[in-house]
Amino acid sequence: MARDISSKRMQRLFKLMTRFISTPYVCKMDLFDEFGYSNPKALQRDLAFLRDDLYFDVVYDRGKDCYYLRDRDADFVVNCPLSEDEFLAMVAGINMAGHFIPYLGSSCESLRNKIKNIIPERSRPKGETLAISSTVNLPVSRMDPHVFRMIVNSIHEQKVLKVQYRSPYGKERKTRVHFISPWFIYFRYRAWYLWGKSNNYSEAGPFRISRIVIAEPVEVPFEEKPEELDIGDFAFNDNPLRQDPVKVELKIYEPFASSVKDVPSWYPCQKVWPTREGDAIHFTAEVRDMTDISRWILSAADCVEIISPDKLKKLVKHKAEILLSRI
Image (cartoon, rainbow, N blue to C red; front, side, top):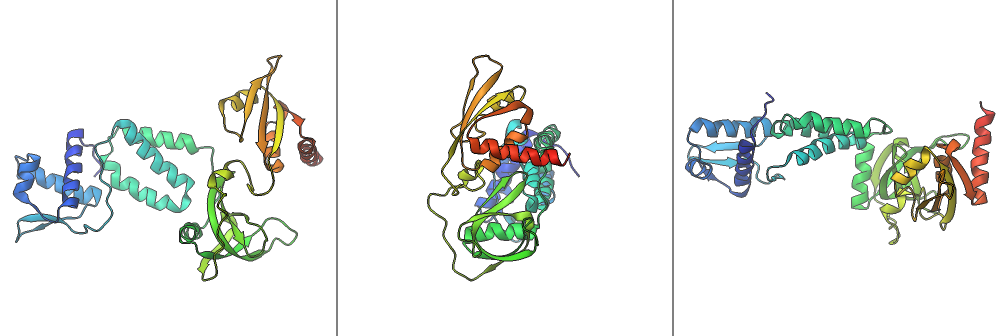
């Protein structure tokens, strides 16, 4: 049964857990002396809480009149008592992880159930509210949890993956088999992507994980990633190896100008300053992929004027013409 507990008792429970993890056998009398129990029923209540609410399997050995932890080889994380903000961070983080990393959804739910009774009652709804507020407008593409787990494991084990991939491009749009050396995964445009080197292409590239039907490790040589490639490169570029960056200059009007000023890292080497008239801002940045920033511009088309380069002007105009032809 869910119930709130005092901070004093919570501190005692954490110390009990630490004691059982660090010591093979703990005598009953030592517990009375060390933790100041004056009533045997108080000790039994704490042990029952550890077993029933925290799944902490403490066993009593009658012959030795001692307690011991059944599985001391398991990985336990024991921390000091947390502040309310630390509790909020924990609850919000668990909820957000379940949202953004779908294959961990059931594990996050299980974790919530295990720790809910050591979280102060007033912190639970606050943490859940923060998590919902952070994710309400950020849906994540559906994906096969087994595929996602297999990709994560293969990246760390440097195993080539044989995948069946459904591409939305091309006339036939058939499922194609790839042998991929996986290097990174990253979240972008409401979906998870795998970046790696496929046997079907001369260069590495992205694969949307929701389009991978089947993934299984195979024993073939793994292609190492370039040393200069870092996961941070994917924050702004669909393909950080594609080409040299191009300087983009825009004039951005309100209300989009305020949003841009508030976020200092839309793009690398970003600079923003007000126009002489004060009705807009100048925006410059280094961009590798024109397609990416063209989407960004079209999302606020009535607030943006493209100053340079001409290549970007032509691309946005082409996309706008296609849109108008369909209205």
